[in-house]
Image (cartoon, rainbow, N blue to C red; front, side, top):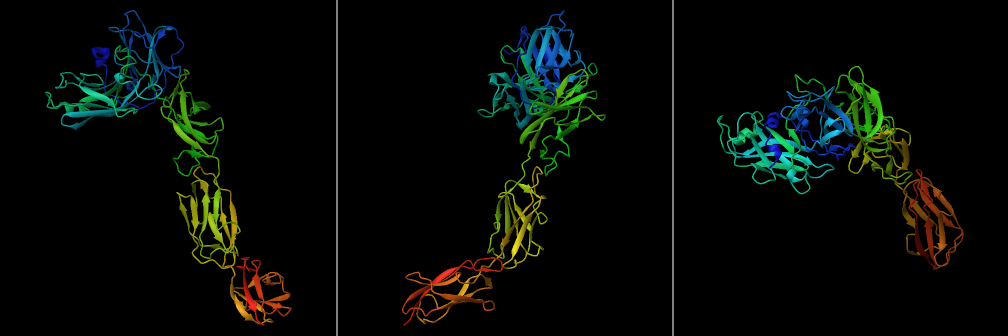
Length: 573
């Protein structure tokens, strides 16, 4: 038998509500030697309505209920008067929160004191409904949600329950206002995790074909947002004892329960956001900055909030007074290292109670500028094709790559039309000239600081030079390679494809192929015909093989080297 099942007063107090998925940290029991965790009294928490109900108190008791977060009291209701042994806060007929209504969240500690250091406490369980009761077919309804144990992982199955509560009529299938699903046998439905290790669960009810007096089938009633509500429940660390319960109500509304209770809801400030000046990323909402002390802004929830504290990765990182319009702006008081950070804020009431923001901002700090890891054509390369593209490979994703930031100039300094494309996968920018580049000329590639990474860090402006080809080649030789019977007084000539410099003794030479001895000779070059002539100063030996060699040290006007080569011939008698 689960004690939570037989509480008519408690059941009447529950209204429809929404569930919020928040992580549950491990509960730390404060150092109160006479506070039981859990205790002998029954404590039930309704976090979606910021309500607490506690049972088992004597008529003369005047309990105080507190809500703690991180060891700090964030909500208090004192001098509560029991009614039939029950004290409640933030529910019609019960007590009210003092000053502000705490925004109760999973992981908070709820404590009921009968003396300053005497009482019971529990923590708020993390069981939520993500999909309310939904009709699958004429007689089947499912509900979905999550259940996370303190520290992560699954809650024990026997601590988990789902309920559908009819608003004003019983279900025909069981004659009660509730349909219950648990892991125990004999309930109206079943509840189970969606797989090993998963914290998502599904509750299922079948056989709901009965029809009520209003003509609705049980399946239609359960799935109706008007006629029923959906609940996820944590039944406590010992479900059989039932002395601690958390009830999450789908679509419930939090805050003060008027007209008796009017203390404003301490929801905490809005989630901090990077200011426009600090959000240096290429996208407006990417939350990436190169600023190591960025500024964050938002709005407080309480009109009388006095100040706001900033927390980055849980570490206090600055504070500021609340502006006249309820806004706050805080610059980090410490320099942040590169990487991802979690940013939250907490507003402080005039009484000194701080309430943290429910959400957090994930911001990335990046101060490392992008660099070019590869260039083609390479720096100072020669003989580059006149139709080649120019590419630059970057160390990380960049933006701003375009004609203005990645350009190509000819030897006269004029910009050449070359549309630029960007491959995000390979991080390669390609400039494709619209014209054939001039032969044998130096060309300059320039990258400007207009190219930045996604955090806005500009690349260091840089440039490099390459020279177009074609390289000069020997188009004709005399005597021909392997010729025989060559005249012993013949000159040796090499016709070159274009005008060159450097043709001289040493760059065009003739040797005895057998001995390697250099023949005495003189070299001339005709700049019009591009013919280099080697004229031996002696008569060559008869029937002897000679080797001519023309060197790569001969270059064209652009500095491209000749494709050097050697060839041999044999003299006659």
